[in-house]
Structure formats: C-alpha cells, structure tokens
Length: 135
Image 1 (cartoon, one colour):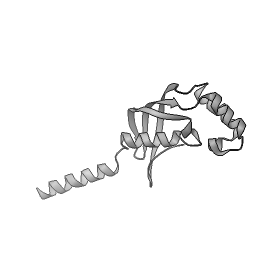
Image 2 (image 1 turned 90 degrees about the vertical axis):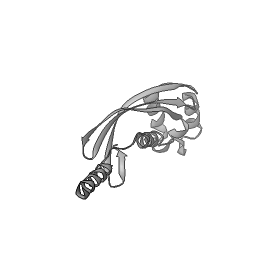
Image 3 (image 1 turned 180 degrees about the horizontal axis):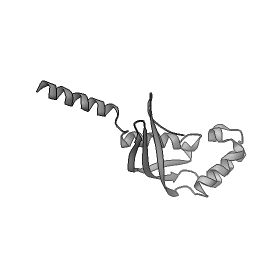
Image 4 (image 1 turned 30 degrees about the vertical axis):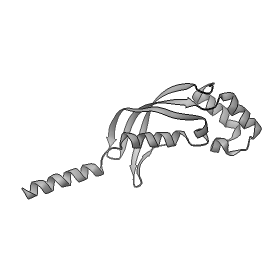
C-alpha cells in the first residue's frame, strides 16, 4: 500500500515538472513579446484565448492563440512622433527609418480605438529559466 502511494506521488511530481505552461503564463509571454520595442504605447492586448496546443517534444510546446489589439494611437500620430524625434527611444530597436514600414506592414493604417483580431501559432521552449517564446 505504501509503495503504491509512493509511486503515485512520484508520478504526480514528475508530470508536474514536465507539464505544459498554463494559459495565463502563455498570455503573459505573448503580451511581453508584443509590447517590446516601444509598442506598449501603441496598443493593448485584449480577449486573449488559447485555442489549441500540442507538445512537439519534451521541451517544445506549440500553441495556437487568438487575441485582439486595440490601438491607443493612430498611424498618423506615430508618423508625427517619429518625425518630431527620429532618433528618440519611443520605438526601441526598430530605428526611425524602418519603424513606419514595419508597423504599417504588420498592422496597416489604423486610428485610435481600432481593433484588429490576430491568430497565430506560438512556439515555446522549456529552458532552464522556464518556458519561453522561440524568436
């Protein structure tokens, strides 16, 4: 009886160590990844949903996610900010020459309050520091 309990406990502990990331953890990783390079002022992430997921290997988890991006600035506002301070830090590592084309190719023209729906496949790796998005 004790042996059965001990084996069950070990199995539960091992499965917990190799488990997949929780939905909230995935949302945080996606949010942090999206809001880098000064884009945190551009939009907010809303209505996050994990649609599906599967384990590709012991250390790789592929997840389908959906979310909405609500713009806090218009494309015209972004253009004005960059023209006013082309070397400013507001859009991080994009650099002023490429930021507008990168933003426009990813999001098109947009106004304050516009919402776009995104669906994407995210590849996660289980590292020594925990689950992380593959870039």
